[in-house]
Length: 289
Ligand SMILES: [Zn+2]
Image 1 (cartoon, rainbow, N blue to C red):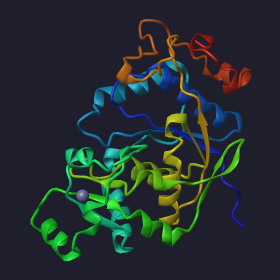
Image 2 (tube, rainbow, N blue to C red; image 1 turned 120 degrees about the vertical axis):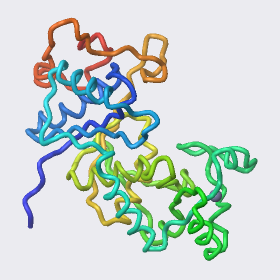
Image 3 (cartoon, rainbow, N blue to C red; image 1 turned 90 degrees about the vertical axis):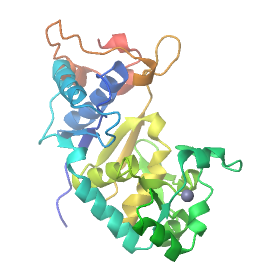
Image 4 (cartoon, rainbow, N blue to C red; image 1 turned 90 degrees about the horizontal axis):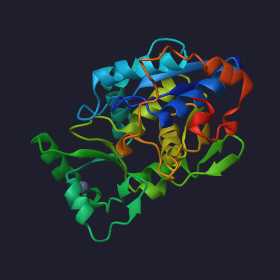
């Protein structure tokens, strides 16, 4: 038997703004899980969306994490440098007969009166799944804009029922049906978040995926992709999201303030935080800032 892998966690921000308190908490959570177990902590920049991500924000994120006193192992992985790898994953799924082109616009789907809401928005009604395959390929060959969707029923037929392991809770049933047929690639973003994150967790040998509770539903879909690709299964630890005194989630879109104050000297408090407090003891942001 191969020796067991060391616990490996990662922090994987998108560089769409400076590091706010909610993201800092997520980073500290992942870092602490790894460091307390003498494992590895990785930093990954998830910059697959060129319309929203900027290099200057990547630089600011690295500055702010350093200011917090966090360190990471290995080099920083930057997703935008790895599109050929994601393409190979898409090719593998296509060869298994699990992808189909979808020519619908977002407005088409939003206007479909029968579309219920899923974790990523309206559930796709399956319009293009029913197109004649030869005609669909002709439209692709002619350069018509399209997305690639996973044919969920076929995928689940291959994998059978799945579970995921939540730290402290044990195995939980996967329910990827909530997503409908998810988009795995589109013209402006040639690989989706779901595809890239599962690919990278696998090749970076991440053993414990830590992230906010808002991503808990996505775990079902991630386990499905991992199984289809024969990738290892990590454990998961979802943590609560930090909220402001009004109860609003701290997020870039709610203009949560930058956590670091470049005008003050680095705090370097993270090592002390890891040795004296567990994440469950952190109730308010000012408990540790
Ligand atoms: Zn479609």
